[in-house]
Amino acid sequence: MFKKKEILVTAFALFSLFFGAGNLILPPLLGFNSGNQWLIVTIGFCLSAMVIPILGILAHAKLQGTLIDFGKKISPTFSLIYAFFIYAIAIALPSPRTASVTHEMAIQPFWDISPWLTSSFYFGLVFVFAMNRSKILGILGKLLTPAIILILLFVIGITIFSFPFEFGTTMIASPFTNGILEGYQTFDAIGAVVVGGVIIISINLRHTDASYEDKKSLIRSAGWLAGLALFLIYLGLILSGALAHSVFDADTSRTALLSGLAINSLGSVGNLFLSILVGIACFTTAVGIVTGTADFVKSRFNDSQTAYNITAVIGSILGVLMGQFNVGYIIAVALPSLMFIYPITIILILLNVVPDKYGSPLVFKAVTIATILFSIPDFLGSISTIAPAADTFSWIPLQQYSLGWVLPAFIVFVITNMIIRNKPE
Image 1 (spheres, rainbow, N blue to C red):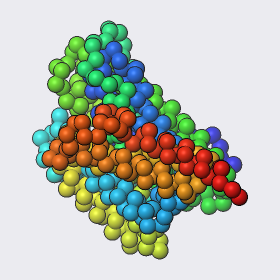
Image 2 (image 1 turned 60 degrees about the horizontal axis):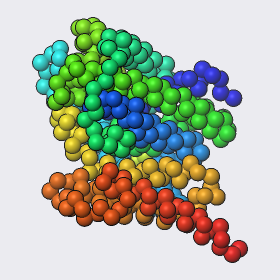
Image 3 (image 1 turned 135 degrees about the vertical axis):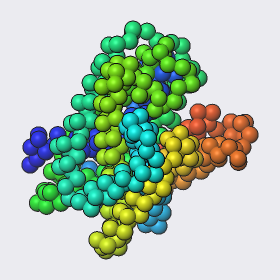
Image 4 (image 1 turned 120 degrees about the vertical axis):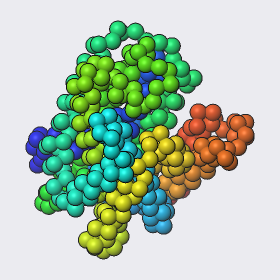
């Protein structure tokens, strides 16, 4: 039913909703620190920042519901609590971070303006877009995303060819797992379960007569295209950072490195391009988060437009309040919540993607419980004031990499499915 143009527009919209502050500022410094291990780091980063999020979109294509549906096989109460935490984290951390990044990279280099003023104006515009949500898909897909991709490719292309193809020694002890954990900070797995719902609702508003299979095909195709675009951009940004190892100081910040790459390659014009890019990329993500959260609250109050409007106002106010802090502070504050909620989100995405015969309610419950239990050490370890001794949980496989939940979740998944298959009819 859907033409290639519609698939492309939806893919662009997905890309823009994913691609925000973290997607821009994290990869270059990751590449800078990875040195000659940049490709290994890229694979790890893309696993958590590209593969898992796109699987989240494929899960949305299958469910075609809301975030509540991701955990419905566990229990309605769990689904509601999980959704509440996801949306609370989304509007309190990654959404405001987009304003902070915009201020540091797109406003501060040109104007001496208070971050309060930047975040106030920024989230005022976010609110305007959120109140015109039926037009979001078209605006993002047709106008903003092509601009993001063109500017990115231009900056990356010139940056790569302006440095010798030489790499320094890695400063990362475990490149692959470090890449995975850095990918957490993009919030894209959370973004997938949040903005995927925005895409579903936008498609339903635009194509009221489309069948389930037609919409599933559209979302899956658009998801793979968006994933390919994310991979190419991440690869380019990480490689750019790795090639710049001899140009910047070892203690350079994320935003300073990204700005420096643009200026080194394109001069003041590069800084202007980067400022435009940062503003657009961050803004589209903030719109997706606020809109997705407002959609969720609206659905919990009998499709009340008033509930939607109030949530959009609250989301914008939170954005103003948190958005005036610097990027490094927001990233540090976000770490504990990510170490706990991200593994649960990854597991729910994977369980919703696997065939239904392997994802029974019992499997959902057992695997999720195992994931929660074995995520607690990572959560505690991320809070410096209560972090346990280093060897307290050393008996858990992969715990030294803050991935102690992975093997237990997999083992429980296999054992639970074996029990179900061997159970007498």
